[in-house]
Image (cartoon, rainbow, N blue to C red; front, side, top):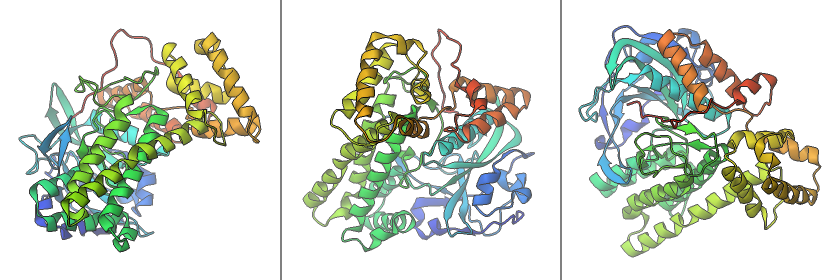
Amino acid sequence: MGNNAGWNLDNSFTSLPGAFFTRQNPTPVRSPQLVVLNGEVAESLGLDARKLSAGVLSGNDIPTGAAPLAQAYAGHQFGHFNMLGDGRAVLIGEQITPSGGRFDIQLKGGGSTSYSRGGDGRAGLGPMLREHIISEAMHGLGIPTTRSLAVVTTGEPIYRETEQEGAVLTRVAASHLRVGTFQFASRFGEADDLRALADYALKRHYPEGLEAENPYLHLLQKVIKRQAALISKWQMVGFIHGVMNTDNMTISGETIDYGPCAFMDTYDPKTVFSSIDTQGRYAYVNQPPIAGWNLARFAESLLPILHDEQEDSLKIAQDAVLEFPKLYEAHWLEGMRAKLGLFNKEEGDRALAEDLLHVMKGNQADYTNTFRSLALGNEESVVFKTAEFSDWKERWDTRRGRQEESKDDSLKLMKSSNPSVIPRNHRVEEALQAAVEKNDFSVMDRLLAVLKNPYAYSPEQDEYCTLPVPSRRPYRTYCGT
């Protein structure tokens, strides 16, 4: 048994029918070494960081109360349906926090499972550190996300295109219930299995819905609302997930799976970073409609339990899904108003925001720094010297002049809505290279320190706002599996 360290584990997922999981211990590793420990997350979970051992965080030791398992799920990957499951992750259990919260504790890279489909179930140090950096950056940006408790090296190599140092990441999530979990239940289970899963999801995330007239419609509507809010937050900061398969959309509304993700520098709606997204399915501009497509798949999976009559069930699902574009649009416009320092609503606000984006695209302006400069009142970059921008700024100034709040109030709102820093791709790569190739984690630590409060506009953040050296080769990201 592992050192307790404050573990207070429950295993409510095992109350579901057995088809949803396989009991599975992590595969022991040769020589685990703790290289990253997130003290803030440990404290929030009620854990004593000083007593968290590499043995437990690698899967070599099983903490008291744990009932390790791998979850089954399915999903559409780039539009194609597949049977999936936790192929390299083991859920240790659900930590009950001192305040009564419940969080999944999952070891990513914990070894092969019955869902590994021939893979070794392992992960490399670089990809696990990337997930740690980006998920913590997303948390700092105020975007719902899974968190990273720790990264442990295994003392064993893994083999992909090259040999890599093996690692295990401890991921903390509100749950790992996915759209793909419901697709699995609907495709391969009975109606009672689907109903049990839906009841579990309601109890865990939306308990008020258990008393609703139609609990499963309540679940569908809640997930749609959460995802509309989440995707709009992605768009506000230029985040590109890279692999928006249905198995990577959570029921809780958290961002999950930071494989080929990245943040946009130069504003271009068609930006794609993922090496495997050759058709641009998950490009920046496509993220909202893809989210709607995924939610339609979620609604389809619920059809057997939304209503006794098939036709009525289909109508209920369609009406619910049709609300997503409206909800997303409202969140997006609210976010853009805040980014432009607008407190009230006017009919021309969407055009005002879109016209600025058009100017940015036409002048290859940096997305984050353009809004940062506006918030600072510092209009010195090339884009601000164009006639297009001058015309737009005149309209913007006139628009702000019609609201009661002062210009200072407007700038304060802009600073709280536009990050001064994001995890720029070249900075992330710099941190990963130092850690993986030189065992130097100080570069990553400094990066994480400035990303902790991205709206601070502090002097130490200035150097992290600089753009990468121009390159003929576009930046590419990889899944890291």
